[in-house]
Length: 305
Ligand code: RIB
Image (cartoon, rainbow, N blue to C red; front, side):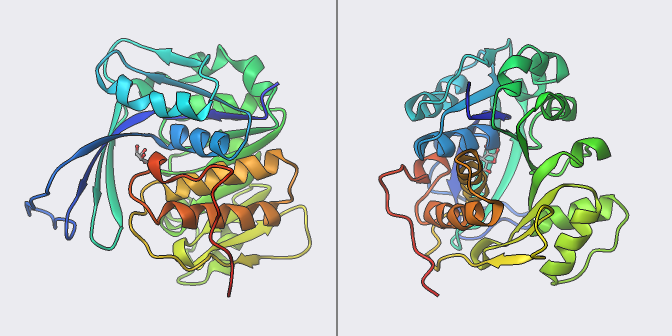
C-alpha cells in the first residue's frame, strides 16, 4: 500500500530571471537559463516524499533529452516510479520566467503529459485505489484526472492548477479542493457564479457551493482560508510565516505536497494546512521549484505573528 499517489505532470523547467516580466510585444534580455526538474505533479510528489511520505507517481515522460532533466529529482526523493511511463515524443516542458519580485509566469507545453488519459490511469487503478490520499492537478488530460478521482477509495486532494473543466460529480469528491485566488476567480467565472471581490470568506463559500467536501483557498504571503465541510467551524484563516521572497515557483506545489503528507499522516484539515503554509513559505526563500523544497530535517519558518 502506498500512502500518497500523485497522478500528474512531469516537466523539464527552462528557467530564466528577468528584472520585470515582458509586456505584450516587448522583448527582454535574461542573463542565462537553467534546466530544472518540474511539473506540478512531480513537484508535489517530491515534496511529500522529501518530508517523509510514502509516495508513488502516475505520469509520463517522453523519449527526448528533457526526460533526463525531469526524472532524477523524483528518483532522489524516493518517489515510486513504477507507474511513470515513457512514451514516444517530447517530455513536458515549462518555460518559467521569474522577475525581481520573485513572481513567476509559466507557459507549459504538455508533451508526454498529454498521454496520461483515462486509459493510462486505468492501468494503475489498483495503485490509486490503495492510496490514503490521491492528488491530482490540471496539467494532464481531464479524463485522466477524472479516472483517478473515480478510482480513489481514500481521500481526493484536487488542486485545480491550472483550472480545467471537471465534472460536478468529480468536484463533489474533492476533500479538499485547493486553489489560489486567481484559480478561484477563474473557476467561479467559468461556473457562471458571482465572484466576490477581496472577500476570501465569501470566495470559499461560493467554491463550496460548487460541491467539494472541503475547500482550501491559498493566498500566498497571507496564508490560506480553510472551509471544512465536516466541521461546523466555518471558514478558518491560517496565516503564513513572514519570509523574504526569492522565487515563488513551485510554492503552490510545496503547499499541496505537504498537505497531502499531513493528511495521509492523519492530521485534520486545518492542522494539515498549518504545516502546508510553512512548507510553502520555506520554498519561496530559494530559487527553483524542486531545489527549494525542504526535507524532514530542515527547519520550517514559524508562525510568529
Ligand atoms: O507549479 C510550478 C510548476 O508549474 C513548474 O515546475 C512547471 O513545470 C509548471 O508545471
